[in-house]
Image 1 (tube, one colour):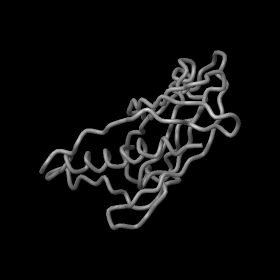
Image 2 (tube, rainbow, N blue to C red):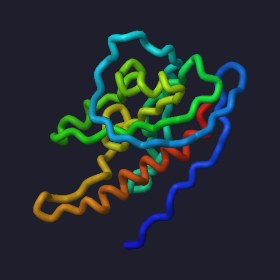
Image 3 (spheres, helix red, strand yellow):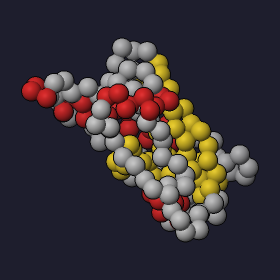
Image 4 (spheres, helix red, strand yellow):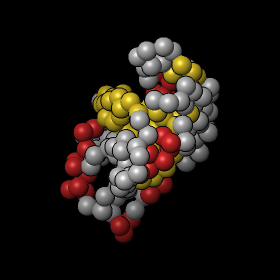
Length: 165
């Protein structure tokens, strides 16, 4: 199987609901299973819901649901996309929620001047739809193709980022 071309992340604009500000988009992708809330002073941020269109593996258009936390005290925030992990039990996937802007992880990046995007992939939480990252059985697992599917969904998040208003 041929490897995919690397993702190119260009410089682009980011529009707020008030005066237009520029955003230098530099995606940093992390895997986060859970975060705790910071007890110290919170970095003020605007929390906007987002829905990212993507086709599932059957060709049906779905919306990956999530939100973006935008620091209020930064004119030109960079963007970090924080990706969730997968719970141990398949029955827990529908209950997964996107990490909040008040989480320790989000607060650290907001405090550094980053906007922070959290999106639930297909088959998780409010995104719903089919779980397309299947790897088969433990005895014959195909983690490579499962990883490619996860990467395809993350790539859709990166591609959508310039469209956020």
